[in-house]
Amino acid sequence: FFFSTPQRRRRMVQFRYTQESPDAQMYTDFQQLASFNEEQLSQFTDILMNFFAGQQAEELMQSVGEFASTHGVNASILKTIIRGVLIFFRGAVKSNLSPLHLKEDLLHFGVAEEKANIIAQKWKANYIVLSRAAMGQTLIVNNLLDLEWRFGVTSASSEMKKVGSTFLQLKLVLDKGNNNTEHVFMEMTLPQFYQFVQDMEQAKSHLEYFS
Image (cartoon, rainbow, N blue to C red):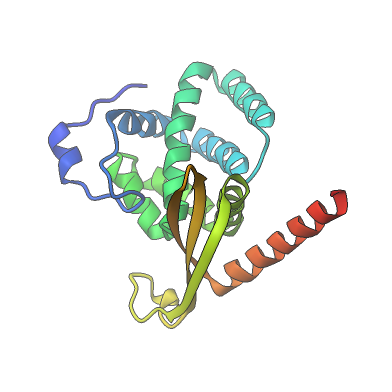
């Protein structure tokens, strides 16, 4: 399950999910992930996306244990892969990566194109759910001090379907404690934003009911 990656190649690659250079362990995690056959990769990606979307840790561990038993994979190796992939997903949501750009990053990690396509298609199918979960977790963990937004229209894109579509850019100012704040920038399509507002209103009503 271990593959080496030339250090020179790492320095030349510009990723979209992060502005920093991934550490060596991230390359190892994705090359181990890429060693799965397509059926295993599809199942394992589903497991990670379910967890990222809000599944409990106990359910994740149960699913990982069943996957390891079914496919004869060392569970400890799976745990290291999970760490890297979840970091990648968090950065991809924060950067609002399209399936095409997500696939490009996967190729940079050394994932074969046909396997990168599998993950990118699942990303496309689950993006709205993953985006809502990520923002919801951000607001639960941190107090929101300020919120700024602006609308825009996509004038150019590598994906023709996005040209002319309306989007919303959000700037969240979060209270990190000890007089420290953090600025979080996110971009959503209008349907994603409307669904997010609906989810937040439902969460608020639930809290009010139990308070």
